[in-house]
Image (cartoon, rainbow, N blue to C red):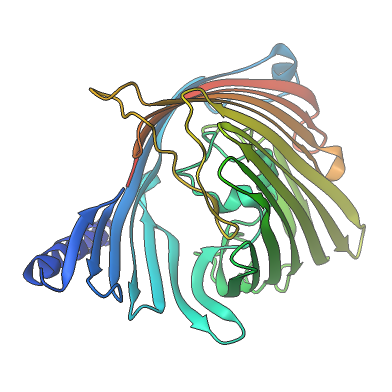
Length: 405
């Protein structure tokens, strides 16, 4: 294990040294610049390389009310800290029409593959095709990078939604890039890279259509819908586990269904921005068909945010959603950076009458485009009829110190 970790780190260091050395020796053909990450680019734009990463250090204080304690709910810890993410990536373009990305995470004393894919662009009819391990085309919140999320953690909505998996995806932008479509065929054959560790042999078909109904200098209305069909193959099990919107927490709802024939999941997404104000919501419904009992459950979230210092959330495109917030005046001699307040309500009404609802309040201080400090207060109401019995309330105050490039 130690040899594996050392080899990985040496490889990443070697990539960095070789990239910068090559560019320096070919100054006439390549340029090196810092643009929220180290970028190397050929003069003719056919070759591009970016090297970056992120460090997110979290700390928090947690508690349960008396009702939760009497119903046998337990705390993982009363306070805690962790490196939530410590990632390194390299991405780029070859011959103008081939993209690639490799991203590794080093938290928890192990190396985890996050992204490893190749994209062939500008193909006739299908537009673009991506193969490898990547984020599935399902949910605006899931597509938004952790570097740009308004809150420290994604909502309860994403407890039942897929994140990354391995397979092939076709996608493109149409209608003057105001609309996009994606369709992915994914397999869970590799337990090391599947979004579901029990999905060995599964396959799923995921589709998403999204676009902007309104897009001008001051207003944006994003709408989208996606559908995922899952067909278990080997163990035919489907289940999910839910923790409050705090990563250093127990999972208070755990469910599973055996002999699943298939699962169908539909997700609706919407986001509206006007100046410094932002609104975003999603609703998903899942239908689980089994030989014993068919069940339907749903989840949703709604959030609002406001940038007190006058900045606007940057919208990249309908494929990936929102991007980096850049303060008008960076912290230091220029000013105090950017301040953002936010509030979110999320709920999951799961199988077996298990329910959880969260209220999360957030404050973000953007010192500069690459650095921010986050504070979240989370109140979570739990109603569990399987793992525990009865209701309870979980409370948390947590902070994050983040740098990304």
